[in-house]
Image 1 (cartoon, one colour):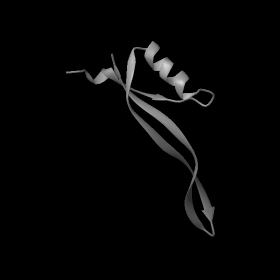
Image 2 (cartoon, one colour):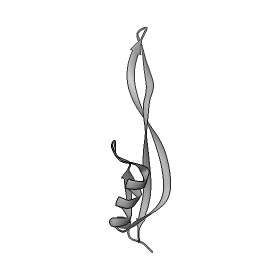
Image 3 (cartoon, rainbow, N blue to C red):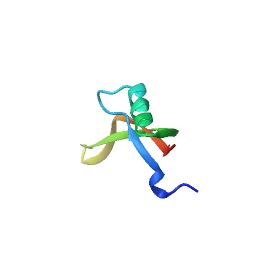
Length: 66
């Protein structure tokens, strides 16, 4: 059974392609098991009401140690 430290999250950086992120994971000895897109929100006040406005999305890979 894999230990708790055998899992890691890799975030695609701002100036990095998905392929570059996958290469970085491989160099560190990890294999992707799941891809997730997480929204980034900005809180704005409109008409005195707080509104969460999505401004971008972040791609994150969940990986396990080979």
